[in-house]
Amino acid sequence: IHAPTRGATQMTNKERFITLLRSTGREGIEKLIDFLEKTDFFTAPASTRFHMSCEGGLLQHSLNVYDCLANLGTMSTDKVQEFHVAGMRLDSIPKESIIIVALLHDLCKTNFYATEMRWRKDANQKWEQYPVYTVNDRNPYGHGEKSVMMASEFIHLTMEERYAIRWHMGMSEPENIQTYCQAAAKYPLVMFTHMADQMATSYLENNTGNKKPEDVYQGTEPEAVPADPGEFAEAESI
Image (tube, rainbow, N blue to C red; front, side, top):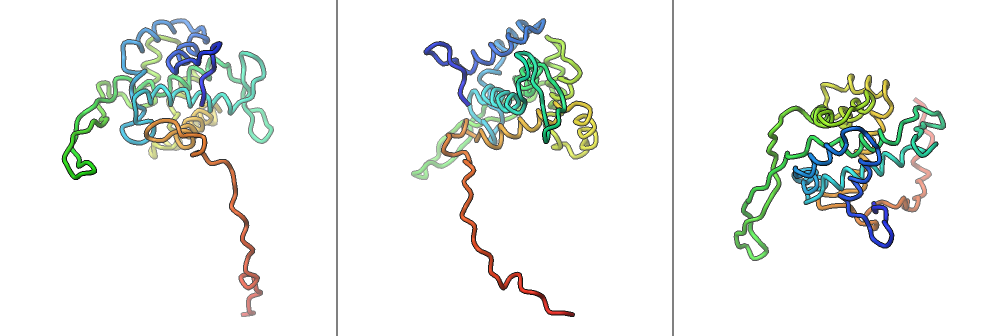
């Protein structure tokens, strides 16, 4: 994913993130940005050891989810995106909602991680210390619901935005699968946000950053191997 260019200079991830948030014009957005500046949001990892377990990983992941979600819809006007399934229009969603939901879905990971030193043997079998990310949840309020709570401290979220952020993890909570399905049926943005999150995590990212273009599956299918005719021979009558 490449950030839009500004003249001959490419925006940094942080600049792009803030520019997108400001473009929503949402009341209170500057207070939210000020809050983020005082936290580790722009430098934190997105996980301890899975996807984007690196400095700035949370910021990059948030932008990846935005790019995936924005590309799932088709732009009908400068301010609205339409979402279709099999040619049927499901919903028209304001672009500002796409931005808010994608960029803030993992707001709960702000001030969530810590770094500690551990020991391992290097290539010469000598002990060395190395840093690892660990969880230090100072505000244990869940995941998606925590992001909703934190964002709502600064800006008003529409009901659709609240549902989409709350349920962006999809069916990863087995005890809540039925509730998730009900939420997705009520607001299509719920499922599309979950899809965008999974697409970013599975196809664009690894544990050290974004995948290189050559590492991403390009859709080249292996040659078909002719079937053995004997495999489909008529069975003997019983």
